[in-house]
Each structure stands twice: as structure tokens, then as C-alpha cells.
Image (cartoon, rainbow, N blue to C red; front, top):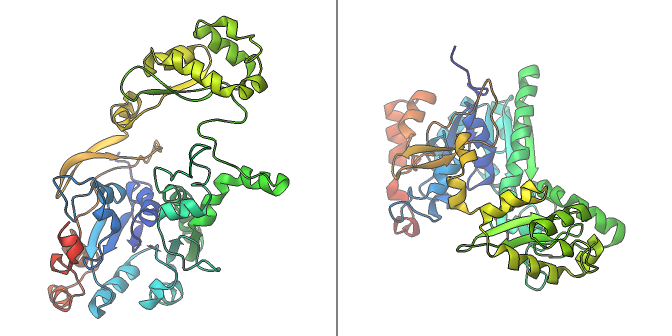
Length: 416
């Protein structure tokens, strides 16, 4: 018997752009929801302009957009034109879920805010996700996940103690917020299934992310202690860090949280005399002499490969792992065994790898069927098959500019 995907039949009108909103919907799309991604050639999604490019610069040549929007259909409309706005309304009336990620008030300019939408579609599940939430003194703050990471406190604590704050390597809040938003969406779907009622879900990425620093916020409230940058060190462990290994830019991470683990490490190093040395015998002593300790361990790890060290240390009961780079991840045997990466053929850039999910439901596993769309790739399919527009209606919308084409690309995009 063919397995039915868990969200088959759920319809999503995705007006969100860049990372956060589409990542909410990615969970749904991989579990069978029909997702239509709304775009415009007049203002291309930022992710379409981000390197790396496959086959040179181009509006459809960045894997970023394709990876974040898998299984989605893509349309290109200009809601500033009456015909484009009419298509948007037809899409909303078709949908079960509508999501947007703009500055508060943007959707209201098109009368597509929740209050107006629910008049025509009372059971709509409407999601708004933005940096700071829909209300409050900073509601109009515009930015991306890197800015929100700074506001949320992550940038300040990232880096070494003797340097300036170091930005996180990803737009941190962009990958935190969707995990909460997707769960809320599923709850809203279940509520609508039971009651027939829709609802409005409003998410501030700032609030969603701050809870990851909850222990340190609590520490400040109690002790007025501010969490500072501390590199790879941990107040409860020593040694705790990453250490150089044999090879070009190869590293191994290890952590020792108690004296028993320290004795085991000293034995693995062939330096059992260090186990009871006054400078290192206790956690407090090791923390006091951490610079000396790190130098000693680095001298030992440098002659061994990261893989060797991982095996040796784990066998001795010491937390340790290779510091993997992206090449390691793509070739990782565990990820391969789980089918985490799947090769798909994009309509413009051809075949490359896409990630699936970090979890699998046994009866209704996720299915990665196709990469994210080229800009406006599915206009005809969506307009005719999903929205039941006639050829004349589509032609009129094209003539008015309500449906955008490559001719509408701004100069900066056309000459990428």
C-alpha cells in the first residue's frame, strides 16, 4: 500500500521571502503540503542573489534559494498591479495557510493583512514572522538574521575574550525561529481540523531566539553577571576546546568535566604523571592553569589525525569528535546511511545535492521531490491548474504587468 504523506492536501500560499518564512514552510512541503511561492521579478528574493553560483552569476543560479524552497511551485506576480493583486487573492482563497515575513504594515498596503483576509477566508491560518514582532517600539526594525542575532545577544558572546564580538557563521535566528513556527502551524492545523476555525500566528524572531540564552539571562537577573566571550572554554570543564591535528587545518574537539576523565586523558596521552600533578589534579587547578594545559594538549594532538584522536578518546570515555568541515559532512557515512542528502536536478543549474530532514516519521517519511523553482517557473501550472484562470485572464495579467517576466528584472539583478 502506498504511504500517504502526512500533510497531503494542505495548501500553502507562501508570500514570505529570504530565509525564515520559507524555512517554516519547508517542513510542510517535504511532508506533502502543496506550497506556492509568491515572488516578483521586479524585486528578486535576496537568496537568489547570494553566492555561490552554479555556472556563473544568474538570477536562478544560486543554490541557496533552491535548497530552502524544495517541493514548492513558484509564481511571479506584481501585487502593485490590479491583476497581480487579483491573482494573490485567488491564491489566498485557494489556500489553507498564508505566511508572510515583511515589516509590519507591508501586507496591509495591499489590504492583505489578517483582518482583511479573514473576511474573505474566515478559516485561514495566517502567519506573520518578522524581526521584532507586529507591535512594540521596535516593530518597524528591518533586517536579516545576522542583525537579529546581534540584537538577541548571540554576537556579543561569540568569539575570543581578547577580541571584538564575532558574528555567527549563519543568520542564527533564521534557523531557530522556523522550528517554533512550524510546530505552531501544525497545532493550528489540528485546531482547524477539530473546530473549523482559522487563526492568526504572530512571531517575533527576537523573542523566539532569546530563550536560547535563558540561563544567562537568569544569571544576570539574579547576580547581575553578564556573559562574556570565552572562546571555546567552559566554566565547568577543563580542558575544553579544539586542538590542532595532523593535516591541513584539521582539528579535534574534546571536553573533560571531572577528575576521573582527566586521569583517563592523562593515561591516553601517555602522561599518567599529570593526573595527580598539583597544577592539573582538580577542575579548579586546571581552570587556573588552562593556558598551560591547552598548550600541553595541543602539543600532543598535533602528531595525530583528528580521526585517530576521536577513536582513542571516545574509547577512554572522554567526549571527543572530529571538527568536521563541509567536505567531511557531504561524505559522512552516517549521513549517507540515513539518506540525508539527495541529488536533484534543478531546471537551470542541473544536478546537485539537497538536504532532507533531521528526522523521519516511519509511516509518513518526508519526500524531497524537486528543488526550489526558478523565478516564475510554474506560472502556467499554478494559474491554470490550481487557480483555474483562463488563457485570456493570464494574457491580460501579462499585458498589464501583473505577471512579471525577465524583462522586469532590475538592472542590478540582470547584470549579476
